[in-house]
Image (tube, rainbow, N blue to C red; front, side):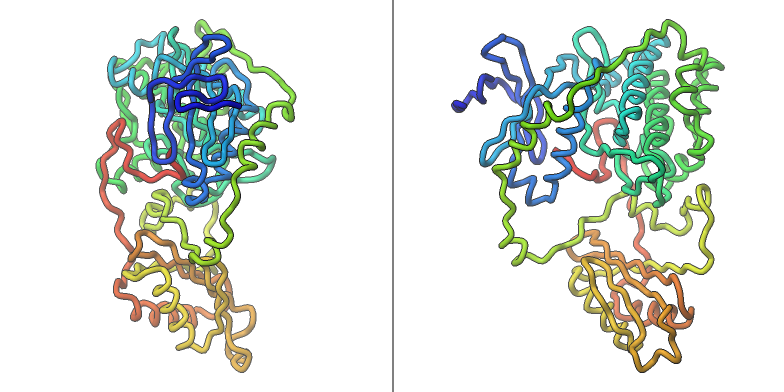
Length: 450
């Protein structure tokens, strides 16, 4: 397959229409048909170095398996030794967020039409076990006729019946409160919450939950504290109150949204299609076959923990723990968080030193250390004692240590915490910084960003 400087297979590349850390998107023309396409060009090695290979594969596979008129289509995937070329449907109208910035807010009829199409997409995805987990106006494109095209499934997850998701991800102004509780959550209910935030923004021209301070934003989301503008109708307010319900068990379902009288006005459902799953995934596998993991580098370079997710950071505040809203606390389980102004390796050394002070044997697995009493002390500290310390790297010289006790004597746990605290330069939990949340300026880190 020939590739010149401006050609990828049968596609002739044009101007760059988007660019990120690991990829750029170029406008292209199919030489055989003359149709336009958007080609995302991903640097394989950068993806591999950032441990994002499976995340990229998941996004491609998910978007190829979802065949719906309101989801951006992937036509084919082409691989070379250094690049992955994702040939996608070109959506000329740009992001919904850009149009919101221009028009301020939508009229009721147009907002409802956009929301109806968004709900159709989410319903289609959920029926196929896919949770998007990053629904926001930036990931909703508009074609030349103003039709919705949902994209960016990089944070999506397959929902297994009876199983809860655990990874807190997405964009904070649109995230459901149960994700901030640092507990398991239902991805379908979380997507519904995000749809409610988008509906509010379409009708109001501003976000329901927005604050310069992270903790204030967190409180507003957890309590569903928002104020509807004066022009909102009672039907709009009632629907929003059922979607923006902080308890996911009481939140309205997709079926109930579709049956809502306000939603039903001029509603014509859009439907997706079925297809042969295997037929559409062959090129995805082939595109990654040329990428070989550098095992030697992995042996030489120590594995470092991923930098802390912003949702994990905010959930570390005991004063703002939302877990009580969703499940009962285990009174026997103790947790303490300490800040460390040390590298991750130095922090582990201090944890081991604190354990040695109490004659505890240690076992390290990745970024977690488990501690048990030495054999000659079993009469004092029974084997059921379970103490662990997990280290999360916030920055190269700043870490958070979370110490947990799920069984055993409280005195041992307290002594260990006291000993470790004295070894660390910072003796208190880290503070969460303030931040801005203007549209187009999302400072919270995401699981990945192309």
